[in-house]
Image 1: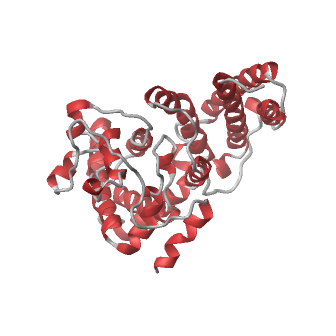
Image 2: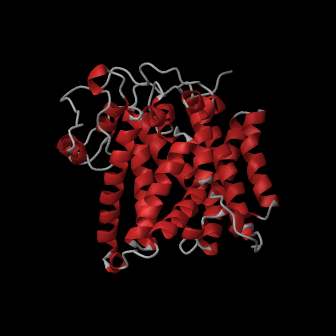
Image 3: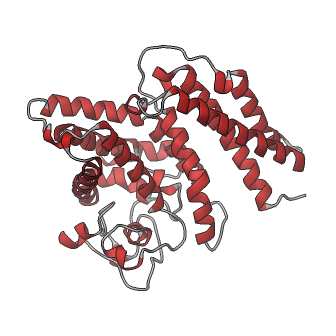
Length: 350
């Protein structure tokens, strides 16, 4: 007997919440190993315990409903995961000290829950068809790897920034109001990323890396995660070192990071979402869909990630009225379909 879409969604939610519950318990027990150092001031032990309680309860409810409706191995998996979380200590797990690490399980859980709770429901309303696209498992692997290594990139970027700019760091920036700091971060980051992004399209060696991101033939909330590790390393190192030079405060950087994470996912949503006249000022899903288009008219356009007017200023703006792209993906290149195939594919262009 086939299951309904609602039963499948409940089953998936039980598994996702179960995995999140285990990861949060690990964050509580081993904060130095699994949590992002920059965020510990805000993601305190109390916050982690409350979050673990909520996620554990959600997993128990979803798992119980799933098992009640359909007794199968997959139906029991969600409950099995949350029971494992409880055996590890659950929300009351002891907190252990330890040496520092470069993993970011807390960021992985936060963005994963945001994806499940916010973006996927929005996408299901927007999209005309709701089947899973080919390649979603590969993009899930990118989602996990890039999020787990987020702290590694931040630490490396800060180290580079300290090495290059420690004697010329701009301290006055830290005295600006928080909202103004965040606005400055968005502008500075988008200006840097515009030219880095454009270079990735125009320099063959960099395009070999960036082509992985463009290899998805369809866009959805998970497709934005398909970014080669080398590109993630380059982009985040450049930004982190720049932020160090300019002296922005930790709260401003964290708020900027949250906004950019939401924006990056929103831009790749499946379905047709436009901001109307604001498309010409703020980068919208429609604007970014044209960047991913393999239609000849759209190639190498719309590089900005936040402010669309940058493309107007630098002559790379393309946003036809009343039309959406017909095709997505790369034009000439053949990008492997597997994670490791994509990981090693840029080497053949060296």
